[in-house]
Length: 229
Image (tube, rainbow, N blue to C red):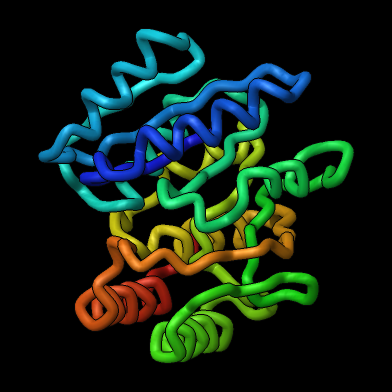
């Protein structure tokens, strides 16, 4: 479990408790890697308190660089056969993790938590935010990733060999890293699958609707113009 975090002191302890409590009931081996993206609050010290109590919780710290930057460091530091990206707000119920793992799901390289495929549900999301997300998703489908309904959900499971192959090749450090990751995976012929989840809107999101939307659209244009590799 890889949790990117930037100034999450208000919820990181509750998130870790919920994640650790759930994983402690599972029969497989697990670890939680919190990738701290240069937080200026108490996020790192709170995670270190957890790490001192439970060696299965680890902190990976780096200078601030963006969500994609933090996810890349966390995924490359992780050691599991399956590496699951998990937003710090736990907008997806942690119990849904089982939908991404054997025996429920097998034979994929990247499993994408999706809010748009049949069987998924979105709760509490403001209409404006929903419409912006749908517009961005449509642009991505038309220009880069036909057939993928939801690239931006913060819950994805990636097989270890795929993670160690793709993440060093990523150039985008912000919120658009998901698009680049999936684009590279598809170009390499890897199998992608969307997994329906329940998703609850959290008002403390780090996404700035206008500023980050403009940056993400610019990233899509760059990816579209980039030569295949």
